[in-house]
Amino acid sequence: MTTLDGEKLSLSTDADRRPWPTKLSFLTSEARLFVEFDDGFSGSVPFELLRVESPSAETQGHGASRPPPPRGKKTINVIGADLVGRYAVRIRFSDGHDTGLFTWPYLRELAQEADSRMKAYLRRLSEAGLSRDA
Image (cartoon, rainbow, N blue to C red; front, side, top):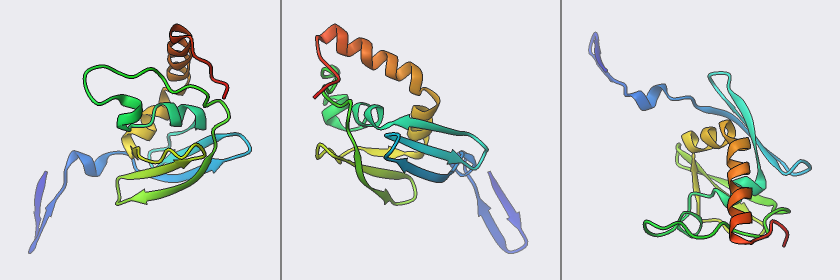
């Protein structure tokens, strides 16, 4: 949308109206990321799910086929996080993984779908004969 206000030209896009995170809390005692957005939505994502759903080539694959799910991540910890511009956060995990950029829409999606994604991850692990334990 473009509006002209006196001498000022204002441009806005749908991206400007997307929910914006107002709080990210890495709760190490619960092994969960708690996230709040400016539209009132809040939710949490287990560290394990953050790690196995990392938007990185290692986790998501390089082509059409998806690699087997990461195994042994049940007790993964977050050891740090860095903002990337105004659109994402890079999370550093205790296993050395730090290449996924979690955009704000993707973090919200993970928080909204945490239960169903965790069930799907556990099912993929089982089908591949892999374990959550290290």
